Length: 121
View (cartoon, helix red, strand yellow):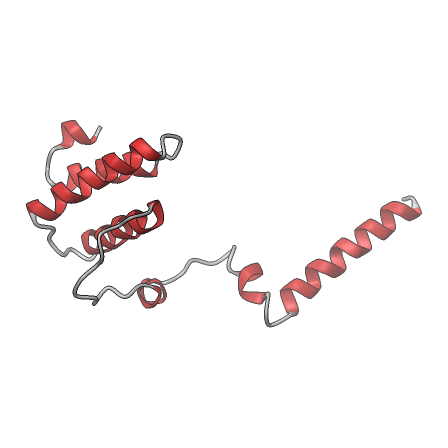
């Protein structure tokens, strides 16, 4: 092995060990191999908020989608009005962000939740 290759290998391994052992970066390095629990994810989002402001950006629209998916996963029923609003929001966001399949997938999730499987595919 050439001296340059040894130096690169040593620096890479040292950096990896440092990143894994340092308390500030440990969660990012070890988090790749582990899955977050539902309670950990629930602590990241305030699901008890009584009102959610109408979305004005794609990030806010994705938060609406995430909260609705959270409710579906926890077997909380979405009303027809909520579902219609979420489908319309997903369509509007899809029109703005055409390269992102997230919006089409979320629209399919809400159609499937409504029992309209032919529209979900």
